[in-house]
Length: 564
Image (cartoon, rainbow, N blue to C red; front, side, top):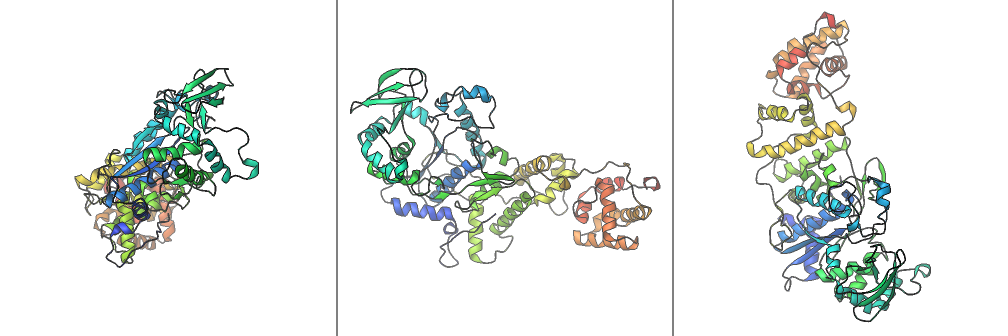
């Protein structure tokens, strides 16, 4: 994972809060939006819950949250809003949804009116909203949720819709400015759309507007025709490229990032910027572009409509909440990366652990600038209490109150498999480690890492990484020479396993044993792995032997001539 950041640190005494892209963005917001007259800054994110809200969508959420923390660290009050665009049209059934044919019957309705195919929540939209709202607190994210279906139905945007109708020609010119001749708006165009109040579909045409609050439409699906009052109707909404900037002004948004497609030249952000200023008299928010996230082994970006997605709960089965935040805090938003569930998981845990050691001063960084950067990434990776959307000062970044008990992920996976995937049994062994086990305060984080390790072993680890200790007495096919080597290993090394101070001294004894038995080191290793796990290869043997209970080891290796 790329953790490179561009920094503006003046001298080695610089504050860690100058060493991260979120802090740079916070400084830009304060500079461009002004600090003196601001009671608080509003930072926004949002999505249409038309399918699984995947990790690519999560990138926007956490990018905003990191900037929110950076602002709060600078003493600013922040309102963090997350908009559910659940009044959008249900246009396509995602490939990973059940009841495909049943769901197709609800196309062209607002997604908040589509039934939940899982029969858990009151609507299809609400199902996806609940999934996200349940998962975000696990990674320390607590926005204030805005539901656009409820807002439109409550006529909160009546003034904004009337303003768009009054500026219809201005809007048309803004949109056409970024289109070639072939794609310019042809004929009569309206900045609003209507869901038929009789059949609820959006297959309607607008027939006229009275210049005030009355809008006339007819439905091409059911034939309904009526005049609605913008101040009372629940059926009318702005089209996307007008709706977005209207809400910037309505919520007084100071910062909102967007994906690379929205930030393309002439894309929705360009048009929204003009609409916001020219129609709604509000300066567009500070922004940046974030890039796609891919799933290793799956071509292209994640797509809810295609169904090739992973969501936050799935990621949290393998990566701890801190590791999940680290994936994003340690990577600039405009950098594309893929999420892995293969052996890369071990490397990512190792990278995080190194950052943790540097942050706590247990490992020296190559220079002060690296220390500042790594410490800041670590601070922003921590799961704090959050602020439940208020404009208060909670939700700041900070070091944990207790230094975590660090155990390498690879080694932890081995310990869990040695314990027959019994987490309680593995933790009990770790707690009695002669080198010093975790304190009671360190146990919750260790337990989370253990659960992630077990999930990874059982669901994603390659077969060559998995093993099961053989029960005592299970037959193993060995040559006479290998059998002699195993007996020597048992009687000289394993019988005295507690006397070895470290893996290096134990490994030396194993090689000496092989030489005495007239075996090549690889031959003895293969024989040992066959006796222990029934494979030709396994974890590093010295560490492996020192991690297994001595009595259990001796019982497994109680070989005799009948096992040749």
